[in-house]
Image 1 (cartoon, helix red, strand yellow):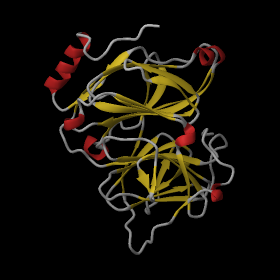
Image 2 (cartoon, rainbow, N blue to C red):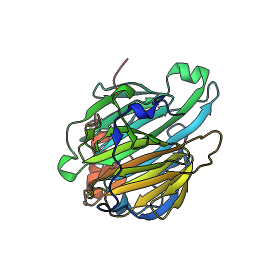
Image 3 (cartoon, rainbow, N blue to C red):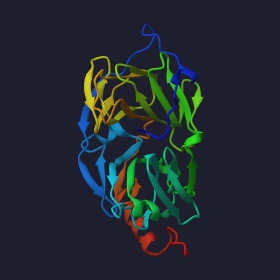
Image 4 (cartoon, rainbow, N blue to C red):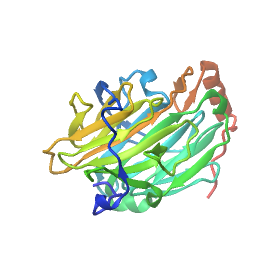
Length: 317
């Protein structure tokens, strides 16, 4: 169960359901299943964007669903120190705990609904690992890491770290109270989320009760993606079936619709989705390893700068 929850969604500010006579529901362009893989020292992930045309994802570059996994004692894994340049990494911990450190002094413990928003910009080194107590005891680990591109004019901006605690997330509900909406970044229905973004975007985690629907107003100049974290349902007015580990890409319009099936699995009593949208940057993208730039030469320069120590140094202690 997601860490951020409320007993009664009817006590939250409501998102008014758009008037169908004056709004257009976005159609579903595609539904893809995320293949499984491993990241860092070997923690399991699902590659949410695999097989999707990059122009439909813009300004997003890459996304992993980390877990959901119940670690036994001694099993929890993370990453070693590694560099980034040219984009932002967003790590959202739905359940569990991760510790982050970086070469500009940012970092800390993120757990149970917290988000770390790291702007790599001109270059940064960082490390992400489970804390020693989680390694020793084992436990639940489930989260998302999203890569958000930076426009060419901002790729060499100064690195920045944002610690977005679970208590800062804006909580809303749909008009009938059937869905809990957690607004992490961007604007939705006149409410602003806590995350400060370079590329205009919105990031939402919604839990849709069995048999309920999620209808969100969505900026026409944003793309629209829905990734299913858990459960089963359908997307768009056409009722395209979707389930855990699948990404739905939507076409043009000004509302997004997702419905939860009336019957769900016992371990996933509701439909949990991550809803993403941003204004496309529409610039060339050359991504290789830990760098996201505009050209191959810029990637080569990033590697040269990393090996020369110009992307930062690993802190001592």
